[in-house]
Amino acid sequence: MTTSAEVADSGKTVQQYIDEAPIWSDGTATATTPLTPMQWRIWWLAAAGKFFEGLVVFMTGVALPLLAAQFELGPAAHGVVGAASLLGILIGATALGGLADRFGRKPIFILEMAIFTAFLVGVALSPNFWVLVVCLFGLGVALGCDYPTAHLVISECMPSNSRGKFVLGAFGFQAIGALAGAGIGFLILYENPHLDAWRWMYATAIVPAVIVTVARLTITESAHWLFARGKVEAAERETLRLLARTPAYPKEVALDLAKEQAEFAELEQAERGGGYAELFAAKNRRATILTSVPWFLQDLSTYGIGIFTPTILAAAVGSQKEHATKVADIVLNDMTAAKGAAVIDLLLIVGIVAAALLADRVGRIKLQIFGFVGCAGGLFLASLSVDMGDPTRLYLIFAGFMTFSFMTNLGPNAQTYLIAGEVFPTHIRGKGAGLSASFAKIGAVLTAFLFPILLADIGVRWLLYILIAASLLGAIVTWLTRIETAGVNLEEIGK
Image 1: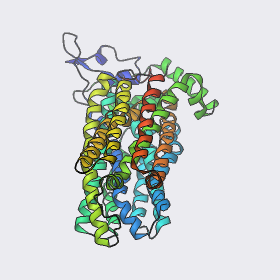
Image 2: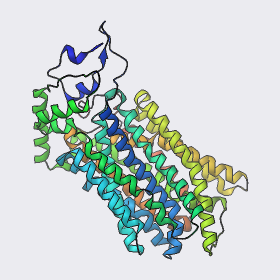
Image 3: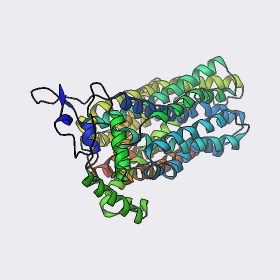
């Protein structure tokens, strides 16, 4: 067996080398491009970041009742705790995520995990409410930076025909983290039924976070980024290191200098234009709307349902004591809610697996629209539970939330993340993905802060009606601004 790289191994782009597949002696190419050990290492380390996000953000849903009792929090303070990490994500996605375009993907990929680890220690040791809020915000800043950066380090090292599968496969670890957060919360409460059990919940992630931080030091820098910055020799070196395999192919890398000159000219023009301003230029405006507005609308529902599932279940099903005053009552209520949340979170995993399998075959846009409509259907089912008696009420609320969980990860929760890291040119890809994630997290922050208040003021039914309308609007905006990226060479997207 030989490779097409051995037939003609000069004048190629970075992506062409990455897409290179072995060919048989009769000249036919193999069906797939096997990943190298380095590509797998990058993927696992990026997946770990998404796991931590799901673990910490959704574990907050289990920790909130304990925090509220220990620090005697009212509804507004309750909302501040829920919104703190999400506000940090909003800030971090733009403030730090955009730095990956200037300083490189690898340094920011390492920095974000170091920040995450430091603030995770702070959360576990928080002596009072305000220190806790600051540390949760710091966690969010690191996780926000991870939104664009993790996507870029994966998508810029993967073959075009499987890029969506691997990006969404890593993103799926957010759902695994959410399930793990609920499970860890339950186990810790079972072994340590006290109000300060929430500290141990967060502490479980400290050692794994340190390991991931150190491991990220060993990955390659993005050859796409180096090439766009005019660092041709470094790009060739990192491409060869990224694609090191046995048998070796390509044996040497010689990049297309004409392509490099064109990309460097675009970079210089973007920097003269002010960086983020280029996202709103005529050629990129449609992509910016597509990646920002639907993501904002889906975050209204996804984070609201994810963080406050225990609260909504209690209000709709009535399975908890209304006035739990003893520590034992609070812990028992929280354990019951954690089990219910874990069952619903299982469908997040099923949904993201389906998304990873279908994104490169069906297309991002079709799945996003179908998912938005499915989310609206699931929330409508849940809203019907309000007028029903037991056991129909229980069946409807679980059927609705489980449908929502599956559909959001099949569609908008997965596809918005995937599309945001693909539709922009290399030199502003980090800024585009970061700005989109930040705009989306405005919806998450609003939801986290207002949910406890709205739940008390307007009730479950009208709250769910608002989220249904947001989901349907997301489907409409997606269709009007659609840009399909499935199977398209990353270097050609945005041209």
